[in-house]
Image 1 (cartoon, rainbow, N blue to C red):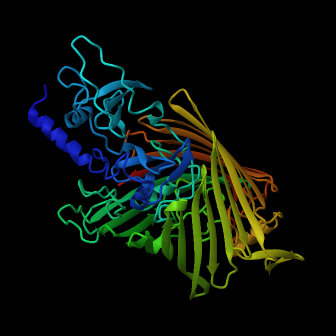
Image 2: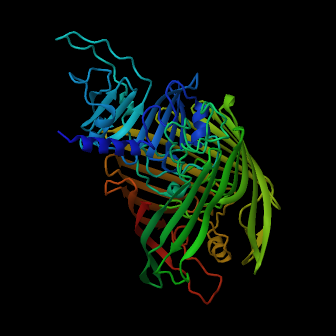
Image 3: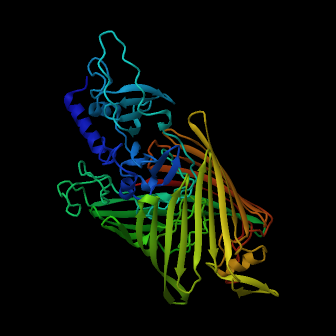
Length: 638
């Protein structure tokens, strides 16, 4: 028998851990009481929002996950909008002994059913459900006696006591089979973290709970606020939703306030080797870039939050850089006015679009030059955003004001102002987002982004209507090239569909097909060297027709492994690029991820994926013809 002092210490440790994933009501969200709008206002943008089978499910994971958790799911009744169930996957789960010390042992002679005890039920992969029915809590424990997930529901009434020798009646489980943690696709586009103050984010094919990411694009984004102080009534500190404290919300109880400042970051290390064929010889070019992001997250008030993220990058093998390079990733201040108008000002991360590779509606960002890489190196956008939620329509409206500094010549820079409007709305089993952007000295751009879930299939489509391009457009004239203007407006369209299949209980396969029509592109290979020399070449946006096929097979467990095979094709150019990646968290620590990959271009020589870039200076030799690229990367969350 464990000494009482040990049990008390263990229970105290669990209580500290439960600050992020605490007892019911979980962080102020209470099944049967809390509404959908309260959760949206408190937690912000979900990673995924799905309407199916009479319920609405909000998933918060990765950057959007509440403090102390890897993912959290809120299930609401679709008609009443009331919270029915919360599924939490903790970052640092408590041990079995601490769980028993805090919530109670198995029901038996010493602990009658309903009196702070649990009833056990079998789960797949030699796991067990511990159902605390009187608390409305179910805990999934693996074979190592570690907590995998916690499910909060409305408490069930305690059963009537049984007579001696009489078997108790069968009790329905609090958590159903579908509550068992599942594995989701690994290679997905990151959802926008700061795209909406109320949390209605454009849906895409995203990773669900328990999955180590295939790409780490979304892991640099602003972290979610840490959990509220116990007893505060706030779902998340920094955003007090309706139904919180009874007293004046603008006057805080400082005795219950948590630490104002949180510090954290990530470390990302890559090692890559590229094979290049030039003048009949094959050479190997290694790179060893490292990147660190450090953030300061301040929440001085329930209505004010400030965030600062700095980035430091360094490659000891680079002959071009003079040393470490520093950059400002994000720097913004967020506050609300009477919880009706939400304001975010400063450099913010913006990622619009639901497609995996091609996002023509992402008007405020340049295209990602390497979308299959493990990291999206693009920083935030300088702007002011005003967001107004419309609860009755499950929608919100955002007004944007931007200011960009552009290079217009040698040592010359200018400030370009702009603005935009974006409306997002949940429709049936999907979502629709409409965008209009207006920039100084540019024609207006309009976009429509839609997603829909239908059984095993997830559909998405993006349509952009533009009157100019992000780079200069060129036309052939004799033996040379001349700059040209775009005649009329053009429609850029990307669309995709993915299907998910579960098998052997622990495995999931996701198959995705995606296409892109780009009327601003070229169908003549002769433009490739010229565009490269002029600095107007944009990978994967050069041609007119593109296609993608991807197969993602994953296995959940302590190591969270996944194998992803992707092929991208420039259809008209008959040029291809295939990539095989393997992802895992091999140290049984979800804050450490490892990815290895090999990438091979093929097709005719001189096509998009197999051409030698020509530098503007003729005295500098060309880059050579790429043969392959391979690498390994390590991601550590600090």
